[in-house]
Length: 218
Image (tube, rainbow, N blue to C red; front, side, top):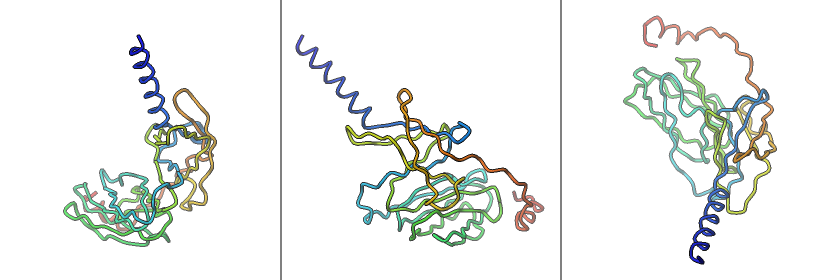
């Protein structure tokens, strides 16, 4: 009997340890809808000056993927093209101003992101292609999925009552990030971010896009 009780207690303690280690956070927007691609900013616990990894922002079905990336300063970001058409990647952001002129799926150019800030990416051919790279040594970043969910790894016994959140609807300045209070909701923590989708404006296609459309190279 003692062995059975000991085994039961060990199982309970293991479950508690796992649940304390992994925490699900769900974010919604001002209208209560799941907030997709929101960046949860967690104070970095790592040696932030020794990281110089490689990240990837692909181009699939005329969209950047992922929409929101997070890297440490000094990271090389590779831009493969998985479409069967050419793309023209650029950014005018202060944190990284660059241009990758028309290239096909046979090339994989890379850019070093050596300054902290938010870099907005675009394509000169396809105006709907927009993505963001958050460059910061101060934060570890977790991005919400299509259900507005993110999983955080916490130390055993650590609690979380609020989290700092940035979303591209706030603009391209990280100082606009909001501190969001979290409330328990079953096995999740939930929080509402004071943002909502901006009004969509119809835009005229760029001259370059119009030229490509006439040629049938969409």
